[in-house]
Image (cartoon, rainbow, N blue to C red; front, side, top):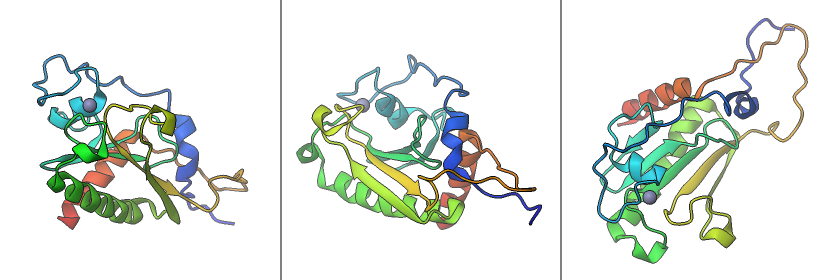
Length: 179
Ligand SMILES: [Zn+2]
């Protein structure tokens, strides 16, 4: 039996989902051409308030945010900065940056959260299950062997809840170190 805290990130989404500050409304933002002012990814594409929108990374063509409604701890959304619904609308440079960003994010998440696997994917179109079908975004969902099972809590084991804000800080720091 140990007194050490047990890291149990797969339990956190339930703890966190109802306790967040709403994102800024974005009324003051200068959006990119073709943007939808109500689209949170379009807002994240240009808003310099990175922590308020949980933006962990932004390149020339791609923005990456922590999902506010995670399936699992560390659930990221990787999106083109432009409000594009179709894969064939992506300029080649954005396609390359998207692929590289996904690889980089997996590396950072591995370092910070030590998941045992990932689900990575794109829900294309409403019938494909996209929550925001008009703006392409890839999900990166870290997975743990135990995350679909009930976790037994025994003895002195503590479960640490982690806020999106805390995770945002850890990921940004990790990405900075990776360059
Ligand atoms: Zn958008």
